Image (cartoon, one colour):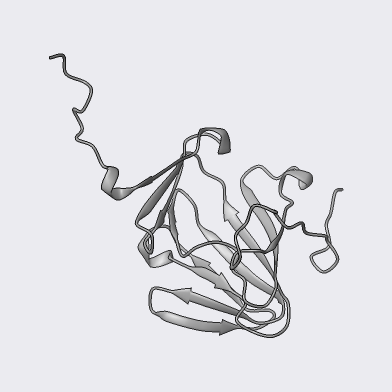
Length: 157
């Protein structure tokens, strides 16, 4: 049996993440041979978020606060979550969320998610859409304003 401890697992910072989004991360699902559910641990220093406000299609996500306090932005406002609190983000706009440590102590959270592909994420604040048709290598990130007509490039002149 392969296992991981949520309290002692080490996370790593991505040097490319901008200030405001510098969170330690460990995607551990593959190391446990998980196929249908993904698991990620995030260590959020004070003042940092794990990603921008977004919602998804093709994916349901859960957050479980392991340590510290987490400020959760959602469509109805903000709430502070404490250790042991669980929140679920369904597909679509009702599941929009942003996780931020707006407190003085570090915060550790566990994110669980279904793993469907293709997957789509919508970022309302920046009006972007991200599409993952089959992994990160094929990822597409566009602004909604770049929308083209269905027949664009299909008809001969």
